[in-house]
Image (tube, rainbow, N blue to C red; front, side, top):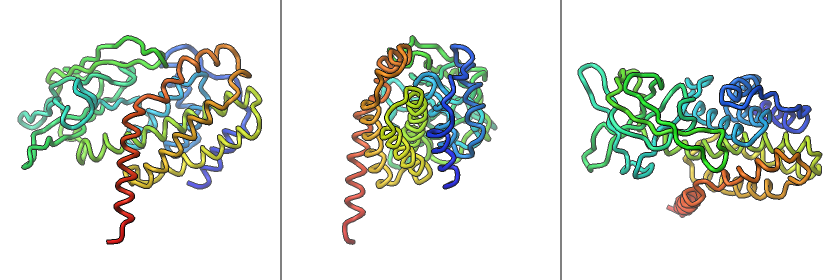
Length: 314
């Protein structure tokens, strides 16, 4: 893995920042370029860095980071456009999960609704969090189900473009008795083993792709060397954190520092040296980095609390 980190740094800081190879203004063009750019790298975070470096806008870099984060969570998703379907009308906490996985003879069926599915109909595979009942303490038992988006009983209703990164669509998911094979129910707890770690995994992979994009833009803008060096240092931290246990309290604390440094560094970059199209898009899309800020802060506060308890003498 150390050798791939060196390859990533050489790619971001040394390879010629060619004009974007994006052929078109849609998600199909993004996906084609993503696959080509990511191919030389073995780790999902390395692939996120490389894909972000090749994109002409932060929205497509985000889509690359999100896709590789899901492949990190479920390795068999590598090479597939996928979406995690967890959020419902009441939010993303287990208490809010009303979607049901019902047992019917030798298989299951899905019934319910998810309110926000990133990539919308452009996702080929859907990872649906669903409830299969409650435990002895009346807590919901959740599972993660992987199904293709064109399965009968699956309907995606596209939502309006968001104010920032409007190139990345989203949709509402309606599950109307979609049939599910037993082998499509993934092992483990749907929340503890998938949704909970994904929050950290997504942050790191989206940060990686965004660092790649910023490095490419600033290389072309001939930004001061010191700022590019800072990007390289941050890329190193991000790469290392993406390869360790995402639920560890110490990792959450380090991620909090990396995320804060990333946002500050991006703001300090000489955007006035970039072309007007890039600058205008960035001003529109920079709000992406503030999404879920309060939730991220809560996770950080909880991590500090856990870390403090772990550090106390027994």
